[in-house]
Amino acid sequence: MAGRAGPGPGGRRSPVAVRPPPLTASPRRLRLVLPIAAGVLLLDQLTKAWALRALDDAPIDLVWTLRLNLTFNTGAAFSQGEGLGPFIGVAAAAVVIGLLWSGRAVPNRTGAVAMGVILGGALGNLCDRAFREGDGFLGGAVIDFIDFQWFPVFNVADIAVVGGAMLLILATAIEGDPDGADGSVAAADGG
Image 1: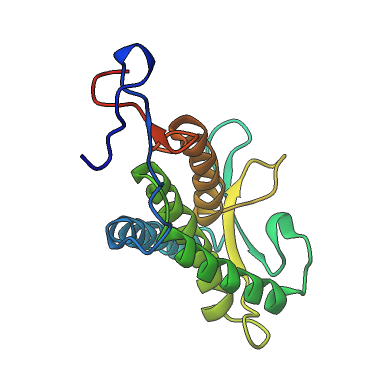
Image 2: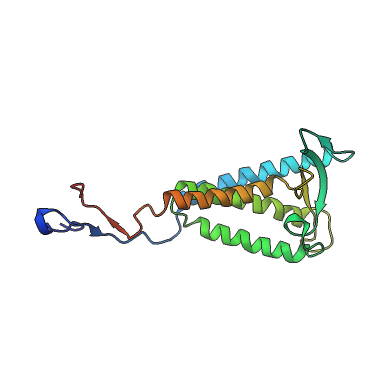
């Protein structure tokens, strides 16, 4: 019988080595990654459109040091690299392509959700660079508006990228390889 090992010492069946599935395109995983990415992208763009209208005149103080304060970031995360928007935009586009490529091969549902969240966030900020007013190719400014006043100002896309990355790390640590670390599975008799 294929896939079963004969009895080992003591009459017990020994584990059978099973090859892990190849990391090929999984339409089922992409069907999860893409709608989640689209939802995050939509939420990000809606909140930025709201921020442009509601925060144009003055910031809104909420609780403690949290306020909603409209800013425009032409640099990278935490406003580093001001004026390097086109280069950052090209790098972001490469990241989006890499996420789409690797999103086809995530090993589990939680990983697919995390990849969708990260992809949606990356697309949100990339859309700002591509379609907002700015200097030339991918020179648009990213709209940031969540301001703790003691931390750099950020947006929903930033939350998605960081939160999705943390979820992906957690999912990998907790769920690991669904076929086992060594690629083997125990025989059907519970051994």
